[in-house]
Length: 435
Image (cartoon, rainbow, N blue to C red; front, side, top):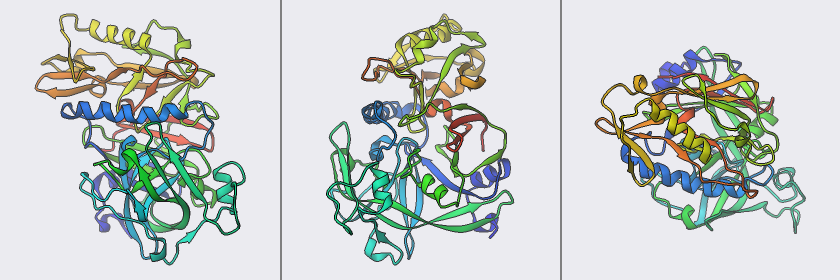
């Protein structure tokens, strides 16, 4: 069926027109939980990041295989169609977690309302003719926990429980059912594809998970573990283990796509192996082409872990020495400006001219000569008329061995095509805006 006859969003049409795909890709439209960045929600953005990082830090010293992140810790959400007959579910899109899970019928303390303007639904295994339970003796269950399931009796459910740093938790059991996707090819044709996917069926929640006003039906993890949706689809031969996203910072929408992209060309840098997130090696920072005077070893967050790339974080967090040096360079361009604090943490100022003319481009340099340019309109937020706030943040985050963490979020990734090639263990990006 022709996409133009199905009335898909214009941004999806533009994405497919402008990006040449190889074969057929699975495409998700996504929405920003806060509707994009802006001065009226600075407090919410920082609070969101604080919650997310509290959970991420708990996993920094562990190998791959996390079970997902709480609802409040992800930034974008999309719609999935599951079961027979099919029903739609809204799930957070999270590159920092490894499973898909949704709230299920009979769930204790699962949210029933959401301020996001969506209708929450509960998945019912008994109501789907294609749904099946996953038993603890099946391969998926043993692979999920990287070990034989303890106390397993043949035919018993494959159960899971995830507890987070703030004490909130989700628990339930794994099921398997058809998830329905739209495959999109380069000629704007779309076809339906079904994939039998194992996912978590949440039967109990506690803490923030059960009380969030910005609730959704679950989480879809784009992590690297074999339990993630992309890994399962790749193992069945339906897609390549590659995904990409292009996110719009102003309007709060975007696209996540599973599959290879052949145009535009994307230069990449290797991923740091055996990390629970997408980590890369940063080599330095330039401000308007001039190298920032900082020791390059400062980006090594212990045991060569490198810099975390996380689309679920709103801002960008730098070690204290890097943050101070960068802020000094930025403000040197406007020595007469006086800054003031907004919401206690954001350095803001009044400026009536064009910010792209008045402030410098910041360029991050990574291994394999990959660069990431961040323009003033990316790292400055408009609060009120002629009032701007700076998005760079002093991380204040440390690993267990005392190393400061560098984390680059939506602030630097928006308006770029970001490609995660899990087959070749690399990540890359290029300047791109689908609008």
